[in-house]
Image (cartoon, helix red, strand yellow):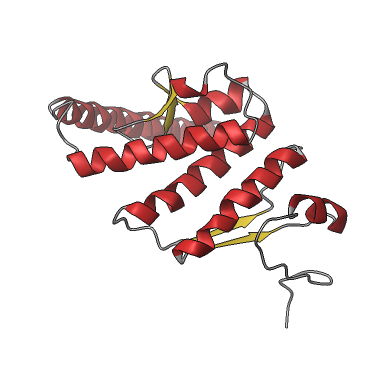
Length: 196
């Protein structure tokens, strides 16, 4: 019985190894095709303007949220290939998740998502003009950064956009963070989503 199980297991392992070999061949083929694409000139001037606007908004927000994991925020760019934040040619979010504070990782998410919303104010994009966030203040992000985030998000109203934020912050924290921030606060007793 043991020999039969071992043979069946060996057969399965061989099948998996063969499937990896096929996937590797497909990956090499795709990489080869990608390498034939032009490195510059794929994006129109309008596309480049959108990316530059996203980068400007992103960097500006990181500064106002007290991002501190890197010395020079201006070294963080938005990639013209994958449209994500990069630092020294590497995906910033992956790099941050390994090497920097969790609170700065959250700041990057805030800045990127709000940046996309802001770009849609000046350019024709596919953004729906709606941003919904659940518990944006994770990983002990400081109150000053949270207040700056709320303030920035509140500007969406004047552009016909909406930002909805669900949070379990205490009333005291919200009161401090929402001073002079245009908002509408809806409080719920208990869980917001529950069985009917």
